[in-house]
Image (cartoon, rainbow, N blue to C red; front, side, top):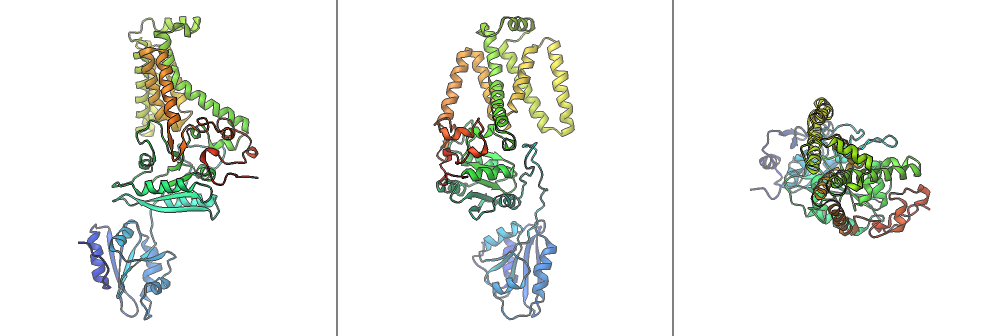
Length: 480
């Protein structure tokens, strides 16, 4: 059974805590002060800076010769800036597992928790998934304290709130809930806090685990939580009236509420002229629509509506597919599946092997398949262009790649009518989806004219005097 409280005997209290933590990497250190009082310290070998612990705690207390042994008195005689007390044995065990040593001494009914945690982390660097030509190049890393410091450095205001929560019965993962007081709606913060507190899961190894718990439709095809690896984007979203979540062990931050139009925007839009940012946003939209619809319309034109194609193009395609043994829909589906397999293999395989795989898949396999008459040249071109177009909006690749296959199946079954019907169903789904009281398709459905200034259009920064009305921030004005 777990002990309910400490006894004041450091040997017994240390043994009781050691029984809760029987792992061999949990070490015990015993020493005495100048008056001969006994002390027992438990710490995790791999998570504690032992040199710092010895210099700031063991050495000063071993020289202590005072009569008072209250916790606050001993805390003043240590050199550690992060010292606190805790009386519950289960909480003390959690602190040891988190990397914070726990100290017991004679006559104490509580333990002293010392903040000398030392967790190996990588250096702050540019995130590989969000490369910027212009603008800040810092990215979040796997340490939540480093990530909160990156946020605090950009938002030097007392209105920035960072609330630390713990999620996971066994992992006890630290989760930082961030928001700007008076800018983010209190209802959003309260609902995010409630959803995080209601999570009952063994372990939380990454922030992606939280997205299903934070979504109003857990099985939705479209994501409902924004993601970013850049502190500047994260802070900009907080300043607009969103709440942010940082998870210890994950470099990907979450932002709520999420709007679908966010993924068509880029951090570089603020570092280029407004007309250039507008052009690139529409270019991303065009590339995504082409990537989704081009294979489907190509198949529908061949099977049902040949008049959709110009005569010269029709003659060229007819000459290319004359000896192809597969039907247009089956041919396009096969090439798309091959593309998905090559993409998945190139991501999972080692970097240098992946480069060789790209050469084999793109040149050898593609050229051989065309030469053998197994697939046609137009199908290879269309699938290649569609694959490139998906990466114009990388945050939507998972959703759009599935939607592209579904569009292709609809086109191969009933032609253009299937494409139109499926498009209408997708639009209805997007319009009716909301999370944290904000429609996913805002500011188009419902139409919010003021927010169109920073949607696909990009107005000059001096024209954006108000925060997005779609987020309903209580502090509506952001500049005068």
